[in-house]
Image 1 (cartoon, rainbow, N blue to C red):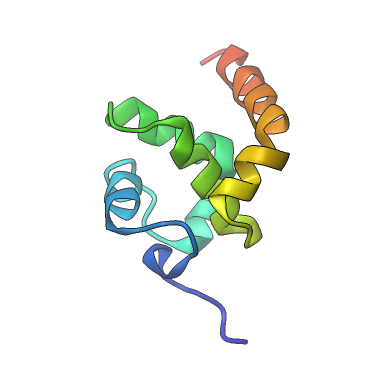
Image 2 (tube, one colour):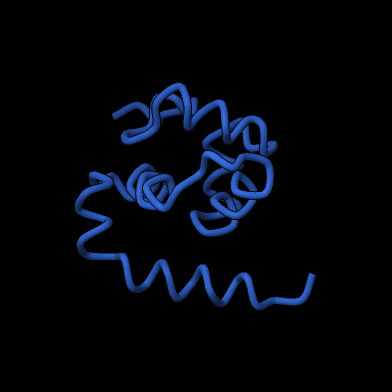
Length: 91
């Protein structure tokens, strides 16, 4: 299987999500994997008021290969706790 190199090629991420990630300075799959789901979501949230928790689920799904709906059902608590932890870190 050929590795996906563009963010738009990842599952769950369409043109709007890709544009929001680019606005946040995340332009490649490698960058997305490096920063991870929660930090990527927070970076997007800082530059776009259109980011909702659905983007958090979609980002996790993009990195794990799960659908965003499955992530929302099975990983919701873990991701929300990680988001809370990340927001509490000093700047």
